[in-house]
Image (cartoon, rainbow, N blue to C red; front, top):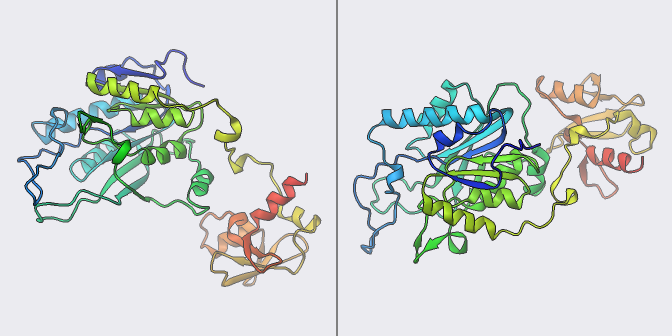
Length: 361
């Protein structure tokens, strides 16, 4: 439940470090940060046809030295850590110019990394000088506040979003362009506007409806727009008045519609009623002597025994125990790793049969 002292659904205009200090401690569920990259462009860049490239040369991205940038980074990350709930997580995006410095400081501040995700740009800006490889990706660091603390990760939601395949840490998403790109007088309003598809994955994966999502470098409000669409609360901090005005206008135009649990709430499978594998035998969904296949390739086979254990390679145990042994003691969810053949000869995870059993209870 959101803290009633929070300035929800507001763009706070001012310095992010100063404004973060005004928010209640341990009040934020999720933070997405797109800080200055410190690109330090030394000269203008032109295309082969001699048109100038609209790069990142904004004043907010200028720092006099790495030391100054590090001080700034440590300050805002510390401020974020204070307001983040113990169960909260933070995403930080950057390029090779800054992400390694940011990552080291995050570790110094005791953030615990969960993933680094590579955003692969399917339509990157070419390297017009031809002196380096085209910069076709950016890196997102996903970290929890406290190592070992419970945190939100909607694994099965992301799997569903990815055509029922476990989502990987390389995301191919186009850069922001076309109608999505906000422009003022025909020019880009913000030089580093992120695509909504990127924020959709971030917010859907690591928060729940009603959670509070904070963006300390709000820009033109991509985080707020997507949070509103996904029925999350949001708070934006932006020091540029013109960006803040554009963000408010953009988010006000989003029609999220009424909240519906059916559309936005996806209970974790871990919270479902526990079902012993033996129940499937009692219900006739699995039969003694039936062959099950371990893993997608199905090269390893096991035989179901009448007591609900699996006999495989001279070892017998539960679907989880045998699976763990086959995976050299790595954690194994037997429901997802053992497969059966249906009447048409198609192999499906035995979790399908568990769902069928629960549906009939």
